[in-house]
Image (cartoon, rainbow, N blue to C red; front, top):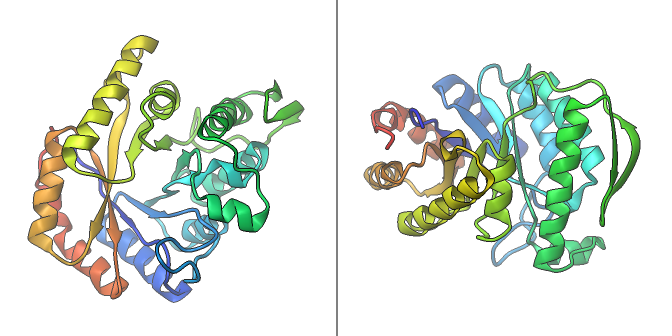
Length: 283
């Protein structure tokens, strides 16, 4: 799987100035990737915290950073038509000079769909829509035209130019741990599988299911890097132990979530801790 690569993520309840400063820290400190999240209302007990739109924010991240890779962990598939999302992603890939990591998941926040009048459907509906989206987007990124007749999406001779800077396309991160559908889609389409969190034992169990789906599809599981999101609350030694625990089960892409309220101070603390984190060996 190779060495560990570290990401930093700030999600909600912060100002644009805080976001810009964390991106700058990520870029200058040597983090491998920098992330936002994709929601239209804040999560948790209070849904009125400030939260900005993910893909316009990624365009800003692309313009205000130079070397760190950028991505959304993860895009909610149900919020945007796949043809529009494919075009947005290519735009960010070009703005960043080929630094986009493309994260996507089925979507789960029913309250946002209700308030915005978006179709939500069943778990199976959302899995079907995600699978159609993955087929459509990878075709738009690589083929001269795309025609697709699915249950949820239909395209006729769709042109998508330019193609991404990264060929054949930006790395695809699939987020979620649904054992039957999400992990099978990860086995088929993902360059990276991302777990939203959980104890190492639970993440290891999901990772093993991913391996079995790879075997069924004839894909080498070593081709899929493994990622987990880890909330950082200021305990440096505790974070080092947690990353070590995840490294032992094959996680190579820890995403460290700055968990406020002192977001910038915590990002600076993580930057100082990064050399020690890099000394941890991957499994």
